[in-house]
Length: 494
Figure 1 (cartoon, helix red, strand yellow):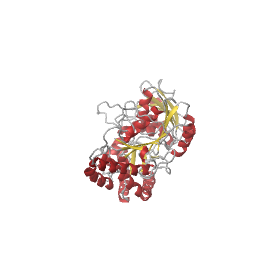
Figure 2 (cartoon, one colour; figure 1 turned 120 degrees about the vertical axis):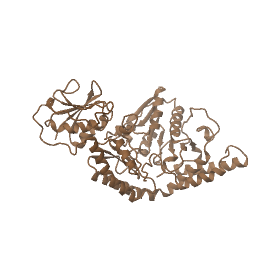
Figure 3 (cartoon, one colour; figure 1 turned 90 degrees about the horizontal axis):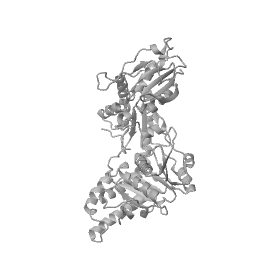
């Protein structure tokens, strides 16, 4: 069964497995002790630190091991902010950072700090100009991922680092997704990464802090790991993480070229074979193994489970696969379609046959999901009926009306929630992609120049209605609060 979710966790590299088993025999003792077993453990720890530092591009005494990549991010942000508290409490983050960065930012804001989000373009890339505009005299730290974990877009770390350095602001880089492929760009001040992203064991993170960067660990410290990661670490896992990092980097150039070709094939074939699909992320400045696309009129959870039953393990940023019922913050920041979202991230060793089989199955599975939801085969482009909008027929629900809590969306006369004369589609209480499906069913019922207003309390509609307009050549006329939820108005242009 092909596993296509390496961006979440890569399969354990064979070198990691060998190093883990070997170090269980020699790396169980406390490396801080002076006896023979302690000295042997210390040699293993020092060798692991040197190997990891070489891959990162820093001095061994600048790098420590943490219990996870998230712990490295949290410690890095808190320590850098604490070390520069006299400068102020300003923190810059891109709008598409990993949740670990955003959670740390939220905690900083709750303590009275200031958090500024730097926007990204539709490909998911931040810009040096965006960071330059957001820098203030009280900015203590800036954060920027090396590459996005959901869409694969590589960020301009070197350019942003140059801007930050000119302002005297340290830059923290989350290199979790890219460290297994290449050494991070120069200019960073603090760097965090996670071993399970490159084929190391889970439960090991890296935190590197350049010499000269003011850094004050906010938590209680001890004599281990320069006081930045207290406690007795999992030395066998650390050894395995460092060994696998060295191994994957030795293989990276050849494997990246091979996987990039497979991903290029996915990007092109999906766009050719699956109607109404948006392939998101930068097509060039991207990670070699990752591609994300969203399918119009598709329930992401249903599609994910269909792929799983077919033997393909993928992930999704759609709100309909999330317990929070909100779309991925990355897709939201990019302003792209979120429904039917699938992320494919290929692990090392993925074969062309696996990719071909995925591409053969995907169009049929997407079609089955759309048929089940009652999605239109193609949007209507026939001349609008002269019948007034208020007389338009109600549209049947794509959800089983017998289901608990089911509502039947339909058209009704406009009220305070919509502009005068607008045909109103009531999709309240319905999750994506139903609001957009109902919009597509009625857009042909209004004359060119007239509007349709969709009432929805599904957060994904804020992304999906404008994205539908862009894909369909219609005008998104904006939104306004409604009695319940939000009213999204679309003007028919074609």
